[in-house]
Image (cartoon, rainbow, N blue to C red; front, side):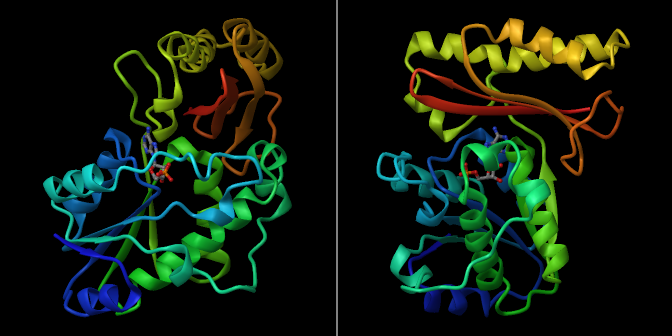
Length: 278
Ligand code: AMP
């Protein structure tokens, strides 16, 4: 594996690739969730590139940009063991100029849910993903696939829309959520949780499990499902519980095969999200 810290070095590496590239963009502090994306990229491509970049433009004032877990050495080891070819770790200065044009997430998918709680978060996320996709595919690989987790469902929907709207030549591959054995969706932010908070945090996945049980009993009414979820979430400071279709439009009734159930909440000081696709 080659670690590259500059755009020139990255281009020098990808110029030598003669085949497909699988790309996994991350913010580091890698866990099994990231690894599942890397493994899929490894399985289906000739070359695998992983990026680690804690992108400042997607953090809002007062969020955890400075405190965001950084584990470069461990991350490099993990990538190496997973068979990554190139690990790209740029810095902010080489990724951004002082005054840049921006991308704005569309109202329907960008401003609801995460977007209302974190305005401009998605604009910054789309901006950096666009930059990274262009950088990795610069030397025109025979095929280009980028791997994203369903864990960030709204992010995934927006990236797919950006790729479509801007005619970006990449296949976006959605990957399933990886959970701990107790059900907690893996996240780099889980390290912030104390032992007690971690137990409380399990309510998020439990509320989704409750929703599935109701759907399996043929209870499709969103109002009823939400109420049952809120009961499970009584010890969590809930930000939203939502049932939407794949276009992120609110539903009154669950549509099998076209529904995403999302939950976000704060446990202690840690903001957590989780979701389930049915
Ligand atoms: P992050 O480093 O948090 O920006 O995440 C990088 C990528 O890993 C994103 O596409 C995430 O959706 C994905 N990811 C994060 N956590 C998980 C998880 N538990 N399961 C699957 N994918 C995940």
